[in-house]
Length: 416
Image (cartoon, rainbow, N blue to C red; front, side, top):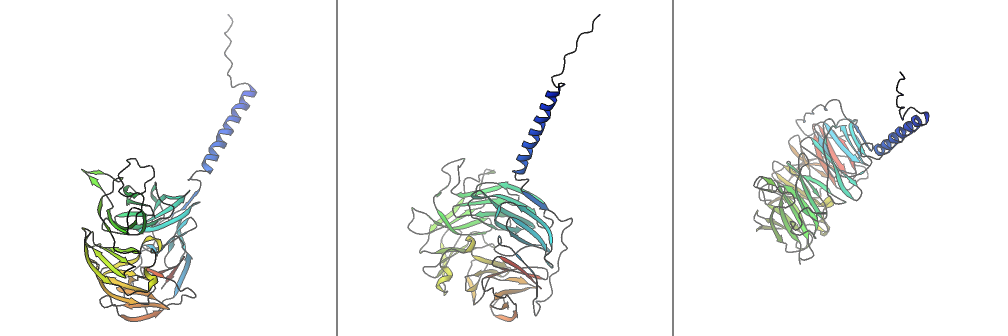
């Protein structure tokens, strides 16, 4: 009996095997092109095997400081540090450095421009510009450089990252976004692109001059085409109704027209939510508003004309907080404000920045060095020489253990 002929496989002929190999090669090549052009291929990450050792704060401010190292950091406005790690950022790369030596401990690089970098509660958050918007946000463990969260969303082409310790705020000239610490959006305010629920933004055609954040609230100076004056608005960082998060519907706490032009939000109280201080350049006044939007007090300012001309650098006034209150660098001097009602306590002219606490004392940058300041009176108890070379601009300070960090323009300098 003849055996039935088996059906010949369509892949047994030589020409078919060649075609199959060609298809596989083309598929692999296509996948390679996709990977090469993807965000993953454009990202380079190097992490630390263990956190940097903690650094102990010195018992007293030394009589002198010596430069330990310096590095470019154009994407930071003020020094950024987590534990014994100092952060520098620029040209698409965020670097965690040993605060004592400047040596790299970890790094995170993308082939995108950096918009802003901030550190809060041990996490470093970096916003990158993709296309025309600072929409790519990455969060890194400041101790090791491991990526902990990531998000993509609407944002302006220029933003400043700010925080009140529990929420991050991305502030741009037409849009404000608030996120929880794990980068979940909790509020959006302003010109929202393609809103899912049109009509929920009260004034989407305004532009923003300055922003301050504290105690779960955002204060912003708005300039709106339908208004005859600038406007101060206070918005909550989160809006919940019946336990439902409504991030697309901002909770506006108050919004009041200001008496005068060239206004900037100076600070919000962290001790009592809703108290807001605004400097009005036209009248040289510091005006404090209550949580209900009522004027509580006005204080005369005697500042050089250029101090309150225009908006603050990076959309936020240069301020620092200690247990004693808020310190505001006006551009020519430092003004101390109470924490609760933001009342001016003293003024120290001739400073270069806000200052920071170091070994239990307030250090304020001055020309040629640092001043040790009595926080109660504003008097300098002594000065310390620091050689800054040819640099003569503003200086922002921060400290980590025995290392004092100075942000001098686009450069971070470590001193000890």
